[in-house]
Image (cartoon, rainbow, N blue to C red; front, side, top):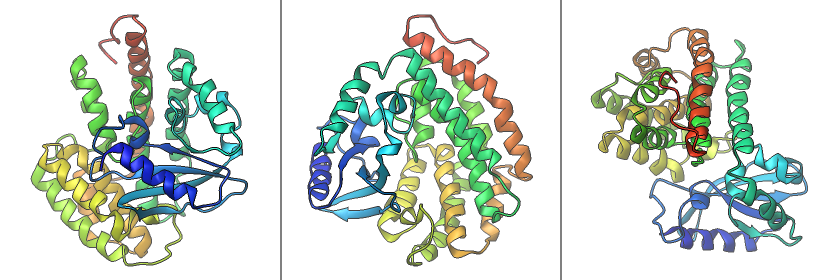
Length: 332
């Protein structure tokens, strides 16, 4: 299925529901219409409603795997609010509107599109991503289940890639964030910076055999958790039979491409989420954390915080390079 076919399927689904508007986000909003949608990708659809609703999650529609998220107009009140939101701004850089009975979404898009690449707004979005790192770490609480605290550290480390992708006007993708930032950095000779990102995750020295072992262990837990119905978590649809080809097959595909270190992010996150759903623990989980060198969580959290000044310099260098101000600092 190519991107255009996936977009059309999403539009037909939206036409059958009651909403105040809808638009595409994620890879379907960034890829060209004639490009093939990767098999391990879903189609992100944001549905605007007048009231807060629980995320609908992943489901199949006409052969496309859609992931629908509800949001209210409060989340997108103005073009300025969208331009400063690194999660949403990319969806409005082009016309990705699926439904717009009031015309409000396209009015916002026409205001966002021309300003999206302006350095001021790019910096705003980088700061937004960095604030997400700090908020996630600040929300770590000893009262939370251990896998939930591990997830906060993993996502805090992972959002460092989003800061750089945002600076480079790239899609701050979720599962493929490490391959995406690698593709962006390596042509500019930024191997040291990239290795620093992997070091925060803890996978920089991990070989493919160990990653395959952790994938196998995660898969066993995933398959148990995927059988749990109506799990009270916003990510529950990511741990479901219809999402298995993304979490399991997508991770295996990365290993086969030689991106085993990059695969560890989603393997680890999915492992933690599966354990949260099951309400249990697993020796394999702790073995994986040992390989990632995640012992005391606060130590890894402190390492992420300590990395932020280097991250800011690198992001500013990327913005400056794009604006013709020369290469980023060599020590960034």
